[in-house]
Image 1 (spheres, rainbow, N blue to C red):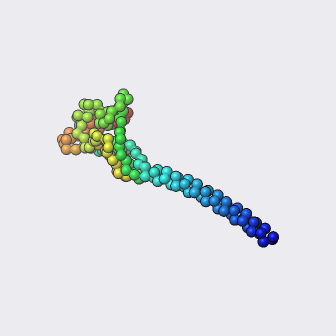
Image 2: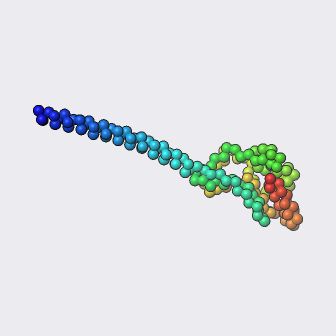
Image 3: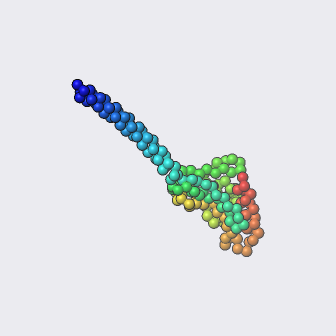
Length: 155
């Protein structure tokens, strides 16, 4: 009689331990799933590109560029520029007056952006002006173009 009571008592404890193990296993699966979800979000955020517009206004160089300050590559879908009258243009050079854009000999400018990629730490020059050979023997033209370009880019 005593022996049967001990077996019943032992079976109850085994059932309780089995239920406890099942609950702990279930909880660990839930916590693991949440950790996996957080890790995926972290991984996506850590490789995101971070775009930054860089503007340089120096004595012998004026430029506007897009820089990728993130860790992952930046693929450009669209860049829109607005001029002083708030008109939206697809090419950055188009926000300048036609007279100025035709008069200045550009060091570098980019006209098509869609589908271009910028590696981490790299820049895509939208517009670069430096005095070059076209200004030979015309120092007053350098100052005029520099002043006019600064004036149009300020807005």
